[in-house]
Length: 313
Image (cartoon, rainbow, N blue to C red; front, top):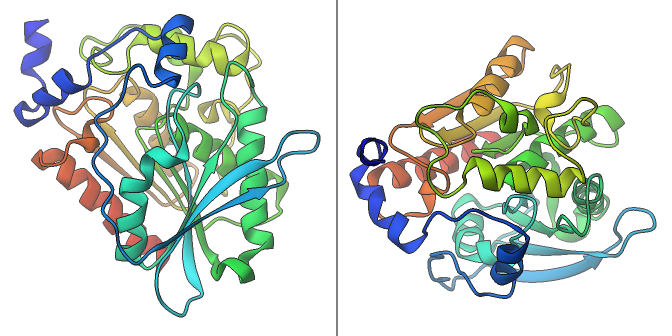
């Protein structure tokens, strides 16, 4: 274990004390959801961005979903970032990312829409991705009211949110209801087959482990992961054809459990002719970019913002 710890960027090591590595299971999930365990979330800094919430129709036969919208000052129409939160498909919410969305909307001059989708295991696939699709469809249909330019609308998410963003991009391409300008995927959770992959000597030791990954995928799929027949709209890496997807920006950490699935997805996107940029941050584990001051975390956030600025032009 000491050898693995030596691989971590020294500035990131204190984050492990605030955010200890746990093996997620059903009992622990209930504790996390009721606030028994909290993540080291930075404080929210007030600014001139307007925050509103909208209850909008969900998929046919499903409950309404809640969209949280951050609108900057100005005339518009604004570009739009449709954000999907992470949490292993089983936890998390849109509100927990306000500390990031509020300043980002101001800095980029963009509307940010964050969706609260139904969580697994209570709602298995396809419920979560269909919630995200319904929310995105509502944004497109109500673009004039939201002061949004649909020609500059893209999707982003972290971890499981990145997995849902990637699946959403596939759904949008295949259904043809609207086009996306980009997808920005932050250490995306996109391949259930990682649970059966040959163990990597360095990844997945911290924050999000193979055991937690198995639990998350099992909850989303409603059955054991890694078997035949899993839909690409659940695990985007299962898609046979990646051509026609929007320009893509992917980041991951060199010690993240999702390293190799993310590398392979980027490789396949490039081979399919999709403009793709990939960043791998040395010494970085899952969720590292939440650290407020570590140079590698600051660099990752700066790279994300710069990519969004390019996409939103």
